[in-house]
Amino acid sequence: MSSKKSISKKIILVGSFCVGKTSLISSYVYKKFPIIYQTTLGVRIERKVVEIADVTLKMIIWDIGGEQNQSRIPESYYLGCDGIIYVFDLTRPTSFQNLEGELAFLQNKNPGVPIISVGNKKDLISEELLKETVASISPTPDIITSAKTGEKVDDIFNALALKLI
Amino acid sequence: MSELTKYKTNYLAKRSQFVIFDFDGLLLNSCNTLIDLSQYKSNSLFEKFPIIESLCAQFNDLEVNGETISIPRIEMKIDEEDRYFDYIFSKIEVENSHSILLIINDYTAQYEYLIKVQQERNEAIVDNEYLLIEQELNQLDKNINSLKIENLFKTSAFLNINDIIIDPIIAVAKKLNVLVKEQTSPTLQSKINSICENINSIVNNVNMNSIFSSDEKLRSHVISQRAFNLNDALWFVSKLFHEKLSSNNNCKIQFKLSEETPKQIISDKYHLIITLCNLLIEVHAVFIKDEVEIDVLLIDSEAVNEVVRFGIKRTDLAINNQLINELSDLSNKAGYVKQVDLSRVNELLKKIDGNLICNLQEEGKYLIEIEFPYELAA
Image 1 (cartoon, chains in turn green, blue):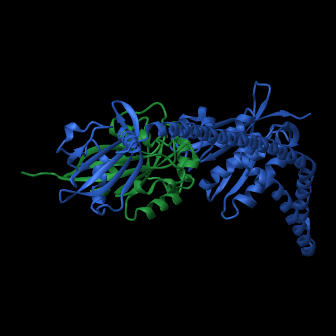
Image 2 (cartoon, rainbow over the protein chains, first blue to last red; image 1 turned 180 degrees about the horizontal axis):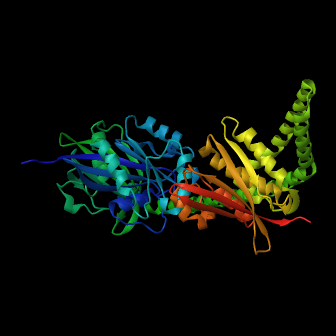
Image 3 (cartoon, one colour; image 1 turned 180 degrees about the vertical axis):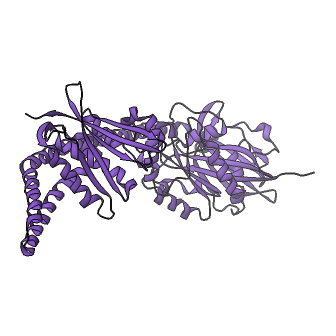
């Protein structure tokens, strides 16, 4: 009898406010897109169990309230973090203009923890503008998504999951 | 118990829940003040409190009655209502074994106000950001319009320069070319050649910018019909091509004018030069070597305007078949003909109501013709 190895990992979603972190989680966990924007004050925690290869991965997803500067996030939110998803809004340059600095801060705060950068709200811009926008972002985002259409949402978590098992 | 302690205990009891669980997340004991955990007794709390599962490893590092882990502003849905709690985890000793005590403090009333303020603040910031982007776009539009006006002015200025200065200089250069051939004195020949070089340099420098100007600039050019000598214009195109375009190879351009071709015509000389130069620029890469003969023919037309047709015959000119099929719609396309892209030439011709014709003569051999309208000068 073969039993799958079961592991539990803490994933945090960070980034500026109103970039779609909660929507991405809702799209991934519940396959629903919240129509109305509702700010996250502190942290919401969701749980999603996935089977990857021979591993049962329990993802504890921390949806952390958006801050323009990640240093404002309470230290305790980072405790025991295994993976980070940094989300920004492709239509708002302020949400990615300091991407390099923010990623460096997060990496410094969580040494060795994998980070995936995600450009969200792809559905709101044209293909042409998307190309221009992505080309102007440094470092190049890992995944471009739309929480609204669900495009590439699963890819974010799958990519991170593969790094965690 | 004093009255004060009694009130205090009652107050806190309404807003706090105490939960004790082991290091595997199994519930040992709890009150149910905020969240009903009665059904979890001796069961795992991981599903109800995923936070406990994600912090399990950290609990081991805690000291009994020592440092605590405090997680503020946790949002939870209890009976479909949003609630906001602060969690405090600490290690305690119960019946000689270590357990974790979780104190849940309910701050829903306080945080609801903060949420409202934060929501309004965030929406205002985002609205402001979009407003700034819109203002920047408007400013960019204004700048583009200013540049268009500036380009239009420059193009008009160039036309004036062309008429006032360049045409007479070209005439002088042509006479000097004749003179230098007739001259037998080497010293004088050398001096005339030197003058010719300087004159050519002036003409070329003034014109080159316009010949190779941007699409935007070409589009902004206003068609201006004036009388000019067709021979002079073609001589200039030929000279420009030989000196600037084919200087590194042996490609030769020769305009062969039919006897009926009028010398003086009324059209846009600048536009004709630009169109022919652009045509030659595009086919130049294919020519590489050899001599290219361009027939210049007067075409009888029943239309009000006559046209002068420039036909480039090539036996080895590679043109994408798609070009032939889509020629009628060429102005809407650009860059799709890999070998020879005639879209810019076509666009220039359309602007003056001219035509680009590309005929398949025999297998793999094409004739490119451009028809440039004119009126006869008096």
